Image 1 (cartoon, rainbow, N blue to C red):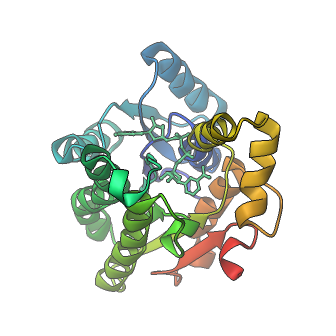
Image 2: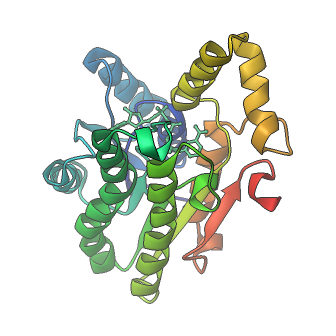
Amino acid sequence: MLQGKIAIVTGSTSGIGLGIATALAAEGCDIMLNGFGDPAAIAALAKKLGDDNKVRVAYSPADMSKPADIRDMVAMAVEQLGGVDILVNNAGIQHVAPVVDFPEGRWDAVIAINLSAAFHGAKAALPHMTRKGWGRIINIASAHGLVASGEKAAYVTAKHGLVGLTKVIAIETANAGVTCNAICPGWVLTDLVKKQIEARAAAQGIPYQQAHDDLLREKQPMLQYTTPEKIGALAVFLCGEAASTMTGAALSIDGGWVAQ
Ligand code: NAD
């Protein structure tokens, strides 16, 4: 159904982004991968994704903290793949500390990568979508885009901002064949969360498995991590015809976290 659509997925060398890129490729989308990692491993990943799904896969090493890199990534998708139909703003980082101890450089980096990158990406990609009269922007926000937790000032601020940006883009593109929605996951067991579990286990002197279970119990009524595959399936749904009048929404996939 998405055969021939061209999708950029930022931060798709691991975790949720890779789950979304894999799901979109399985639907026939050509993919622009992005993110950090070992170049040989990324090349192997791109080849496998392309071979498995009979789609074209390109890779941009753009650093999402750099607006010029983001513009180059969009230009590269246009040059190498022929356009941009779907933009998934997924790349993200975390830093955990109380406001009084929060390093200023970490604040700036989280805001740049988790929030400003989505603005720069949308600004560069939207003209290609509106010209064709079809486009999808999906912003990977978080339960932390809807509610807060202590010690995550930059992350919570960026994700709330991303939900706001989603609504503005949705309004501006409402009659242009473009939709813009946010996905708000609860806990997903990726590298980003494994680091938090390890830090928690070390700080409390408890085994990894206990910290893993405690993290869930503290926030989610459902004691299960969501998977990148489930978020990929939701992204595919948002790109489909059934979701063509869905725009400006913030969709929770969080085991009941924000229902409380
Ligand atoms: P992850 O650490 O597994 O993946 C992050 C990806 O972003 C990687 O590909 C990494 O290389 C890339 N990245 C990091 N900094 C970058 C930069 N400056 N430029 C380009 N790429 C960069 O993390 P994840 O858990 O898959 O997170 C993906 C998104 O999902 C993030 O926006 C995160 O906030 C969000 N999210 C995650 C969870 C969770 O529980 N894991 C929950 C809610 C929201």
